[in-house]
Amino acid sequence: MGRGQRVGDGLPVIGAFTLLLVYQTFGEVIVQLAGLPVPGPVIGMLGLFATLYYRGAAPAWLRDPCQQLLSHLSLLFVPAGVGVMLHFQRIGAEWFAISLALIASTVITIGVTALVLEALRKLTRAGRDE
Image (cartoon, rainbow, N blue to C red; front, side, top):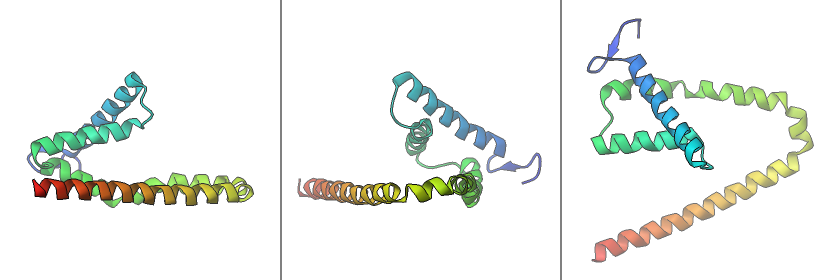
């Protein structure tokens, strides 16, 4: 998109990104005020999801820039890769603890996912029986 171009119903792309940042800031404020142990962007994302769910769908002026952002999401992982390379020797020294944590967290995640899926399956089955 060139300078001054607009997406969808006329809102500039900068407006769509500003909206995303407003929800992120909203999440950060909520986390700081409530002292929640959750990242602010996650709360902001839940707020955006609730808003879009209430509206019924994401408008084109928001959907199109977000699709562009998602298509370049891999670029956001470059700093993490640089961090891994920067601390490569420390990772080598603590590989056992890191491996154990990765395996344990994966097993726990699979277990919790299975329990949630089973609970939801029972709820939907109970809802159909009534």
